[in-house]
Length: 201
Image (tube, rainbow, N blue to C red; front, side):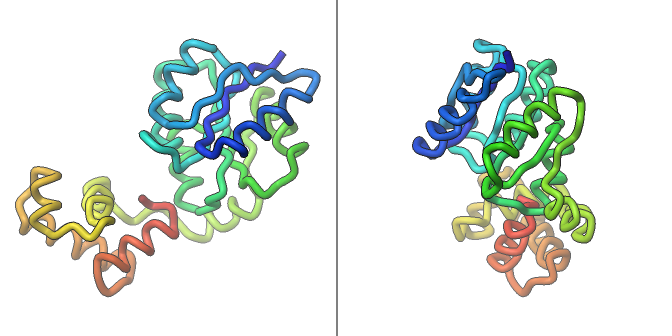
């Protein structure tokens, strides 16, 4: 029996996925969580064979949780199942150790087949997204530039960002300027938008 953990913040979607997967003769949903910061604890408790993780979750992103699972429960495979098919997300998921990446608009039979394929040792990636990721190239932003842009998401001032990240205001301006240049945008809010659309944040 394949033991599955589901991490999905929308209750109706999580319940529907659990019901559909439990209908598969060889699958059993052994844990369900609505927040990213509960994934590792639930996985350590239930010992699933595979974790189906959404990306945008409260508490901690599914991408960060995938990296945590690789370290703390390497026997558990990770399959990202998300609404947000962005090339940068795919690249980050693979770097975090995910074995697959599917977009939610596919049929449920495809999901069950993908689970079996991942557990058989295959990598399963949405074909359209794989092509987009190859053409998009790698994330041009450094870790620090991503942190500064993320801190700027809510319209925070340079002083706010500097205080939050323990950097000087001049350093924050330099990182913002670099990020704006690399994203080909005119200001930091456009840079944030472009980085999000590409899945770089």
